[in-house]
Image (cartoon, rainbow, N blue to C red):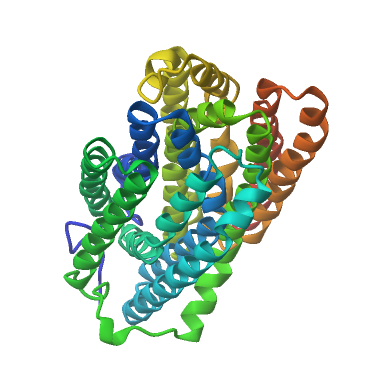
Length: 449
């Protein structure tokens, strides 16, 4: 049974031109991830403008801790993407449906586990991060409420991964766009009208995540076969679960290890006081937003490579890598330039406090401005995962980014105790990791002729 080119939501990744298809796939995906980040970004902006620097710091300082476990499970959704894309490439229709239902089952289990974890470790983990005393109680409240939305966040991410495996990155975008509008409206209502502060923005984020997830579920319930979701068919079939875990766990561990290193960095930021924490919270939103262009073209490299590698078309895999890299560098470079040049105007949307603003501008210049470098290790890492090498890029990132950053915090930053010096760890770690990952890609790719 042929499933390519039969439905309007599907991209034929195996034939024809590539650049236009990579852009059609990646740009809506980038916008989707940016909108997902705007859930938290809107929280920071609303409390920063209409509440206090302490409330702003409480919301922003949660990011690294929340991502610690979230990234592990979201990484599993990359496994779902690769496995479904592989079966599309092989035209094995029956296996697609089993992989879809196993993926959604993993999503539900992951969401419940994350909910339990978040409620259990909120205060201990924030204490370990040296969260300032004047914001710790507010930070714990935000953390716990946020995790009530985890089952829906997992449903969204795994469901979106299934749709993207066949080239549909538009409907995940629509879902997040609608959820994002709901989030902003509820933020303003809960904070300005009902004066709920941190509780209000947390509740708004949970509700918006529920909305986005339910839209994705609706799309899957009405999807064409073999991608259609049927809750009666949910199962954890070992063969598919193992394949998803084999690809997804290294990707998730990479994200988790990033979070561990970022928690270490956040601990250093917190040691400089609540204004430093608030300033970093404002600027880090643009760190994430810029990075999502990298993430989008990395996902394109994973998905397009997986389908073409499974179909035995290695020359096309090389073209996917080159075009993804070029597109990622151009789009991310433009975003970095905008953030550097108009940093004051952009950051003023989040805070008018001069001390907070000064810390935020330092992060913009020392970290966000160099984020285009992430393409140089993420895209070759994505291509390696698409070819069935998920562990190697994870090990490289562990050493080049995570271990180096932790060492930097306890040596260089411990000696200088300067916010700018702390931010310099980002471009240094990106450069080292990029050289190693590119070397690994070019060493492995020629062997698969």
